[in-house]
Image (tube, rainbow, N blue to C red; front, side):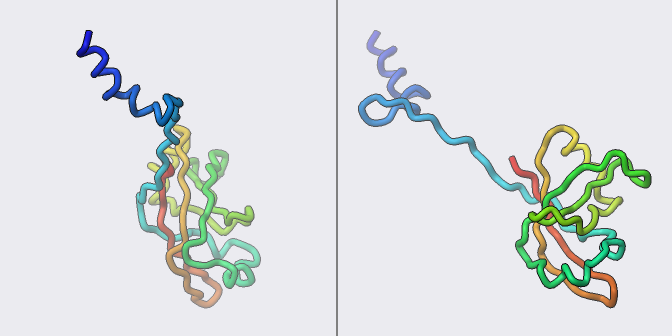
Length: 132
């Protein structure tokens, strides 16, 4: 019997009880897992990208959305700013695994790492993350 009492107070149950025996629920563990470096494809097809470019900054978060009805690529992933402005796509050669993760309910997003205006082309480099 003495052993049972000792086990109860030193195991998982004791982790959930704080002062005065109050039950303390741990917060869910969330983290951002870096997956890949790439760039935003299709910026030349975005109307007004030249006007938008000055408002894009390194570390800006980018939201990813699946576009399974895309006529050119069934694995297409649209990239939008936090304000919902479309700025391009995850490159086709990089999107298969990310599309599968998103289709399985995982949250994938990006962050701008660098940008460069090359004539009418705006090259935007990003890091892709999985939020877990």
